[in-house]
Image 1 (cartoon, rainbow, N blue to C red):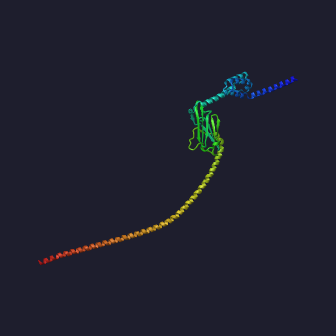
Image 2 (spheres, rainbow, N blue to C red):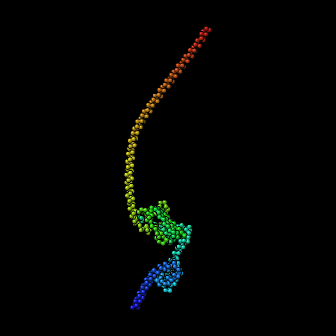
Length: 367
């Protein structure tokens, strides 16, 4: 009886132990690489012990395990793991090559980004293209100075600054062995809704910015008035064709509305001109009436002035005639007096001569 009791207990213990081992094995199988990552900070011997005990589960996810060891720089642990895979007859070389090349590329990019000081970078205004819909402006910037030249594939320290009327983008990259600073800035034709503008990488070596217009409209150009067009600016034809029909319908509608507004303005202008003409005629009539009254008064004044001038002239002529007559009478009197004096003088002389001649006659008689 005791034998069977002990046997049942032993059997139960074996079953329970097997269950625990199978659960642990299942856990290791599903999360072995994650656990490997968690123990990498421990000593070399502990990592090696873990790999040895779990090689059967670790070999099933070799790509993930190789990536973990490569990215964390655990080269000795990686070498041991690969040897264990080789012992098991597992092919790992392709996965190893992928992991190493990925890591190498990442390290090269980091090296290119940080091997130059910012003062060594050449400033380049990038090539870009643009298009529009009724609500948005689309920009695509290429990390190169021309559309047909190779550009940077990656960029660091990127900064995008969008304001109400301007857009600025800058970043640093290395093209070949030449450090380049991408420096892009434009002043927009109209205002923007900054809170709804978006931006992000569009493809390798390019960056897209979507600007939300301040209002739904058609922009006749991208840049602000009096802003020279950059030589490396182009139309984004693919995007333009996408919204061409929408823009055409809007332009036609806007043109019709503008015609209606123009007609209304013309009507208002003609009405205004008619009113002004009527007002001018009214003022002219009032002025004419005032001029007639003024002319009548002026004519009366002129007649009075003419009469006064005539009277003055007559008085002047009368006075002149009177003076002339007086002068004539005076002259006549003067001549008369002169003749009279002359006659008296003549008579006196004759009398004197007669008197003188009379004694002589007496004397002669005596003789």
